[in-house]
Length: 323
Ligand SMILES: [Zn+2]
Ligand SMILES: [Zn+2]
Image (cartoon, rainbow, N blue to C red):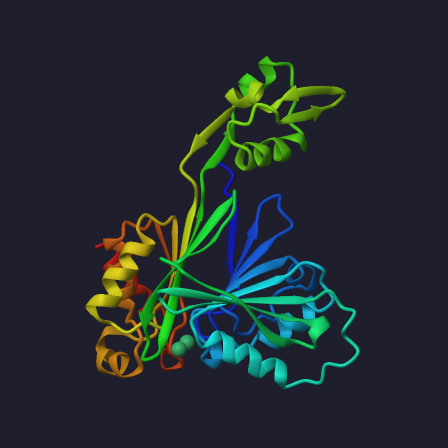
């Protein structure tokens, strides 16, 4: 099975946590957290459509300017999701520059602020010199984005301040039965991407057709070559206080993830410090992942006090995970 999501942590364990997720065969990428993003190539920066920010502490948000510079003049909107603080923080960033001469740019930044009950949707458009315009406020159970390919859910947690954790889930995965395909006299080609997209976007629609070479087929008559399996799931959580409410809500969100990206800020021996700073310990990260039935645990965001002993942090988390 070829995975649809290709996640890549941009920085080392001790630098800003930032997860870049490229989508296979789509000219699209998603970003979790917006710290130092200089490791993203300009061509990849341009593919980012949606950014999910956990909270607006500097190490999770300082990359906003780099991103904005990279996508300025882009004719498709940039969507940024985050807790309530995301709105005044983006507004503050935008107010830090002078914006004449951009009124003819198509740039639009859509901001979705989730407070645990409601999503407030605002837009900052270049044509209005990035002045805030509130579009809507609606109730939400945490499902922030849903399209035919994937869904992103958030849960509101406590980090001394509100902080979001996220899951990214493929609706379902389509594998192609090559033997059946060959049996129909067809060969593998670029048409398969279109075929999969039509299956996702128009399920059960008998009017959909597809051109393969010089022949026209109905999508449904080829549907038997598609094997539907469970979709891929990735989750991302960082900067979370160790308390029962946080842990229960987080386990529920990340349940069954193929990969769980998680902070391991402190060692268990420094648990008091972890409590004072509202962070997880490596051991808690490992046991969380185990309880949630996660397949793979990827660690990030270590305190710089362990710069000489990163293996100790990894070992502590993995011991709890594999226990
Ligand atoms: Zn942090
Ligand atoms: Zn923080």
